Amino acid sequence: MKKNDLWEATAEGYTYDGAGVVHAGDLVFFVPGLLEGETAELGVTAMKKNYGYARIAKLKKASAHRVEPACSVYKQCGGCSLLHMDTEEQMRFKEEKVKGIFRQNAGMDITPLPILTTEHIHAYRNKVQVPVQTDHGTVRMGFYRNRTNEIVEFDRCVVQTDLSNDIVQFIKQELAKLHCNGFRHVLIKHAHHTGQVMICLIVREYPFRNAEKLVLETVKRFPAIRSFTCIVNRREDNVILDGRETVLYGDPYIEEELLGCRFRISARSFFQINPYSTELLYSKAIEYAGLSGKETVIDLYCGTGTIGILCAKHAKKVYGIEIVEDAIKDAKVNAELNDIHNITFFAADARKGARRLIENKITADVVIVDPPRKGCSKETLDAILTISPHRLVYVSCDPATLARDCAYMKEHGYSPDKIQPVDMFPGTTHVECVSLLCREGR
Image (tube, rainbow, N blue to C red; front, side, top):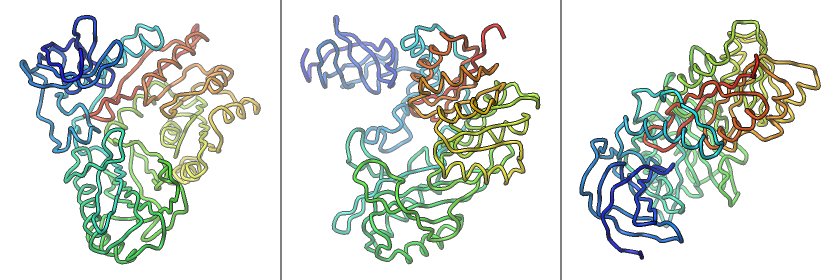
């Protein structure tokens, strides 16, 4: 087959990216937007040696799970690539994705628990990071089209809050009106439970033209703003939040509530994006930790201390380890905010931090890890094995690295008892998991 050839086929399943899988003879094709069981006339868009890509030329038989995407730039943006699936099909897809990745990456046949989700399938994000391009007075703000630097502009992003959307449109108008320049990104954080808002401008130079007026007009229009800062970033790569930060209005942070605790959030600090699903995720992690008030807990990759502080209410002692020093500063403040005194934080990468605890003969009943997408290093896993906790609670944002690490831990005596998927990002292909691994023969 060659490009633009047409043929009719029925989707037999999905790729891990949510594309429909069809066959043409011995060739397999991947079709974005085609649901399992749907029949369509397809057009070849690209051919490789043993597989190809196709588009839907005409849908002949639609699935009962197909819905009209709520986003006006759904196809152009590509950020929420499952908006054509109803919630039921999205949940099934994500459960099967976790199961398939464990089988493929780890050779493990697992049955994940039914995925946890909430009713908040729209307007759930508490953070938006919008690229900005200016050209002779024309301001473009939106999201990058997949694998390009082309900005797709939007009026309303369905996964952002109305307030965040309004702020994006207002700043876009003001940048054009005030002839501001040198902008790279606008970062907005909107705490859903407290209502507080942070704006951080990522710019090439500060001060920039009409900086004071931009801040005054924006704060006047949106009284929920508690923090307005800018970061001067002259880097030419895709690292955004690097450079000197200046407070333009209010404080360098906002505060949010989570499971009865209050947390301080700065521009650079990590805080889970979906506050509703985060409560499900962290509640399950605490449940799997099995705390009675007598345990010592080690929280690796602790960030600003969220999981560790929540665990400290139910544990004897908690140690939090995080490589980002600013995050550790925030974590210590967060412990004070919540009157938590049985937790100790220190800055180190997970491997070195765990080794430091071992050298100081600190043991733990429970280790909790919440690593980035790349998962845990072999050295970190080896350090956990040396600590030898009764339970390892693994919070993962990537099932592929979770499966890899579970396979390694299983080889060394820790079996995955429970794998609980959580839908943190409705409308997208992403799925998070919290897993309980227990020491065999415990």
